[in-house]
Length: 80
Image (tube, rainbow, N blue to C red; front, side):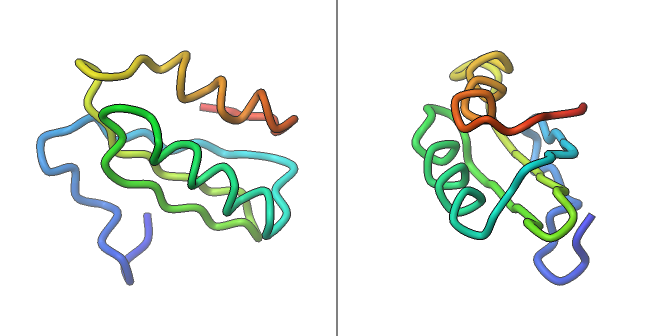
């Protein structure tokens, strides 16, 4: 987890960390925008250089499959 941005605190929501393969700087920004556009996604932090991705969301408003679909639609491989 990133100490600089505080992405280690959950604030009562579900926090997931993914390892994503295939990011470029552009695809990381695109994925971040798409994730933040999903209902209930409150926070996204992507380290494009190593694939570490953190998503803080409300499972009452969006499903895990919707989040995974964002990566899949961009040809990115995700490991939970």
